[in-house]
Length: 326
Image (cartoon, rainbow, N blue to C red):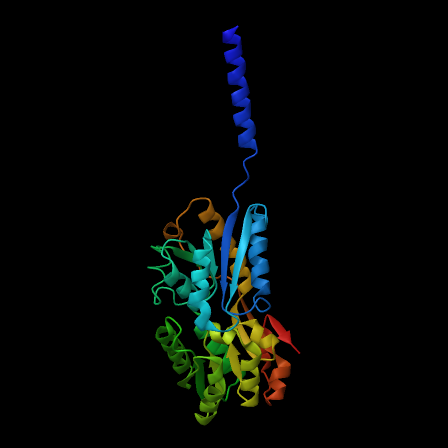
């Protein structure tokens, strides 16, 4: 009888263990997202990230939750916001842009950081190389090797009489000097002369455009930077006021009334970054996940913006455009 009671007791215990195991809630991963601009300006990228994760089997509030931090254009707040994500004990941080990724890297050397589009990563000390990141940072680059060269070539073709190009950049951007040199070489290769002006915050925009006008610029080349990306309308309005044909790196500027842009699809970069998040949550280390370069780019021209500054875009340029805004 005791033996029967023992067997029954063991069976009950095993059933209880199995029941308890079945009731164990699924792991809910916490994904931190660090953004230099606002929720409105970054909406398409976040939607693409969520879509990419859904395609990989993740559902919000079921097995993932997001912790968003927006700098609202104040790049100086990025270190503070990155520290908040670390304190929130997120499992991975998604960062778009070199300044954003740098702030995240400075905040943690252990939490994995996934890049959803950034340039100058090796120069900024974020990775050892694309094939061997070597730390807690990996993901999708934003700038392909011919990125600056193509932008300059399109600008020269659109404004054939341009002799002097002025680049507007933020000297505090990680890897700025190396990128500026690449633009300088690309500009001089077309026979134009090159000069740079700078703005470290939004209050310096007006002074930077005055400097560009004083330098007798025939065209403006906007350097990629989180600061400018947070104020597309202000930058475009300043360029129009100065009657400067300008080349931008994001369609946001052209949609805001800018002349032309050549760059990658930011939403596509965010969608690609979901794969890295998935691999990391499954146990892979960022150091073992080689980075990839963007494969899709888009050339957009705003004919209406050209007319407003008295410029006629050559047909040869329009024929190369992926999208024309009239």
